[in-house]
Length: 230
Length: 264
Image (cartoon, rainbow over all chains, first blue to last red; front, side, top):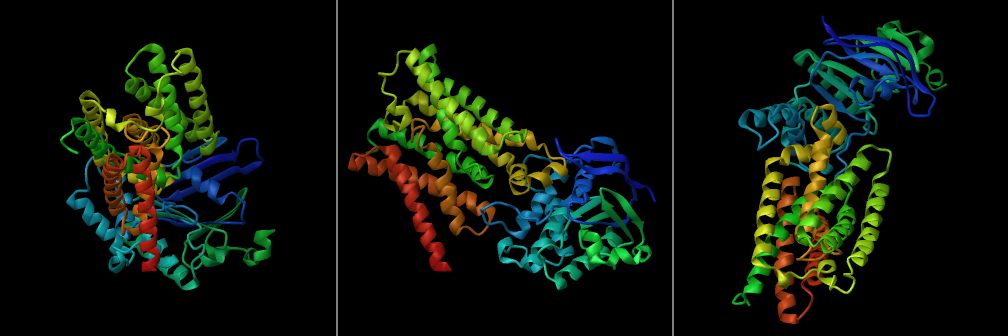
């Protein structure tokens, strides 16, 4: 396995604020499926944003030798008023892999179709996003990320607002994508009970890395939600 | 009506602006920047005033000052130190205040500024039409060529940034296109009403469209129909063309909203 990302002595504080992350050390190999868990406000999202280059560390070093990222932000939504079809949304995800000028070529349209198919939304491809369920919308956003053929897929609280059935379907989909496409997956969630059954590794963040290992090695006390939210 | 050259020129300018304003406005509305057109319009007023002061072609000075104002708003917004509405307010009021001071300094307060504030499409000349048509066609061609990356930024700006798209230049381009549209549209609907022609057809189209692409196409159709209906109605009813055009666009919002409600 080769390196997907490395954080060395990374600390981060927002301007004039208290530190969010302190001296974080983390290394992830390509093809790993890693859950970043921990309490709200513990620094999980910030860590993800540092990896994606959306924030710069106050000190320390972030190294990501990958080139193509797919990002599913918290409560992913388009924020636009105009109607948007699934195919249009996924087409947006293909833009970084094409030339800037002109329409999508045949190969790119095929890649969009394939990304929609991978998440099981082919029957809904030309429907408006707003007419789909929360779980289907989530899968449409994953298809958008897949259309860019990412080496790293980063998901921030992807199960917020979707039912248990959709959460399990999402988990199964991600495992399949990792196996089929070999991408590295970072999955941020404050409820690690929802992810520990299908990831190989859990990293617990509370300003620092307080646990890093297989879910089975997680100390029993961490399974107590009151401990996590303390 | 079309026997009269000034009406043919008016329709020519109206067709370009009717198509261009909603096409640019689409990207502003989706980015929650519907009022940026008003802000740039007020900066354009300062540009007109500067033209009077320097005795330069007014459309040219309005164009240059508008683009500078639009890029300032975008620059302030992008640096995140200034919220979007605050950046807009800063440029908006600086523009109108600067315009008043410059017009006064040029001794042009007695000039009929109304033609720029509320439009004067019936005074469009052949050379005006040439400038409006060539710049308007260039702006529409640029939107068509860069449609996909412009949409990518509108749909998910942060995602576009993560994916490595040149987000800041694309946002600056949108702001510059808005400024060009406003400078070109001053004669058609006026500085105070141009933002309406950029925004209302888009709002109307979104009520009945079935996709993003159809929203843009329908909004351009509504923009074009509003201008043509507005000019024609104004001609026969002896009304101001700019205001009439905007009222037609507002009526289009009511009609599409009604259709949307009836459809459930």
